[in-house]
Amino acid sequence: MVKITDVARQAGVSPSTVSYALSGKRPISDETKRRVEEAIRELGYRPHAGARALASSKSNVLALVVPLRAGIHVPVVMQFAVSVVTTARRYDHDVLLLTQEEGEEGLRRVADTALVDALILMDVQLHDPRLPLLRVLERPSVMIGFPASSEGLTCIDLDFKAAGEVCVEHLAGLGHRTVALVGSPPEVYVRQTAFAQRVVQGFTAAADRHGLASSVHPCEAGRGAARRVAEQLLREQPALTGVVVHNEPLLEPLIDAFEKLGLRVPGDLSVTAICPDDLAESARVPVTSVALPSAEVGTRAVELLMQKLDGTAVPEATLLAPRLTERASTAPRNT
Image (tube, rainbow, N blue to C red; front, side, top):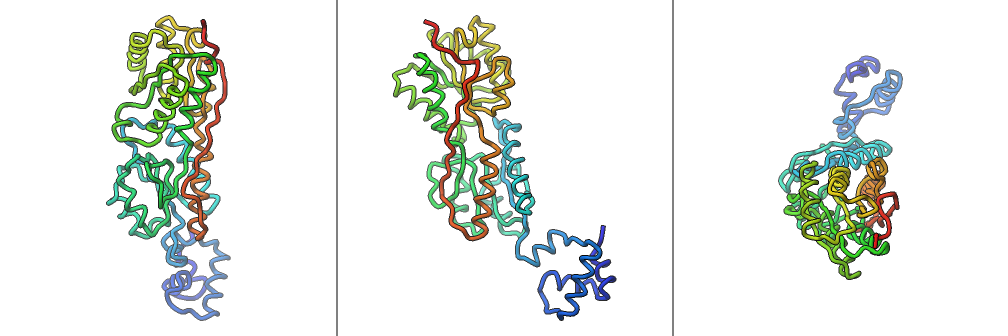
């Protein structure tokens, strides 16, 4: 690896002079600067991030704040993270991944250093404690998720309320009159995680609008939990013929649990989900689903951030419309 001392030796100057030429902190003669630049080109020297930051007052690093709290499905979160990282590289930016619980104090610590130019935040809560700081922070930010009020912020996400509605609309259109939502783990709702709350709002609103009998059931992941919630649903709603699942790891175990209890999918029970397309397609019974557009959301979050860094005005709210794909798990109600 070429070092700054190698560049200094090639240019016939001191390492500190090379540093000053890179950072602009002290005046350097045109002739000396030319020799340093020639040496850099000939040796293929790449200044480390700290030197680039001094030269441009930017780190070319984005912070992606993804607190890995209980109830989060990490594989889906990582799909968003991969999209953010690959898009950031197209803009010559690296990504610093912060997975601990970063409240206001943690965000301020990151923002007050020269480590990052801007921030992307995930796992947004309706009344997120980070909001007051984000509204006054000098460094630009984008939230993947919508708090109760997005005023003064930049937010992007799937329209989860509409996603819940679309799933119910599909079931209602097939003649189903009793439906249930099997949702995220209980702690996700206790935190008032925004996307989970929006799905409940949309599901309930659409069910009420169509006069359907409905219920909402938070559920832990795992086959035991799937069996218990399936038994509870059939005990409490014996006329149940339609289910919406918003809990990725529970999808296949729940279908298995219903079938072991004597319900065929989709002959006796239609199942829809809000989940990644690859998960819905690979299920033993391919599932009718609203896709989680992780690649598009991650890409557009970075693009919004780049525009903000360039001083370009961006919309406060970007909601992506849900897209439902019909597969083998739904059918007209068996009368």
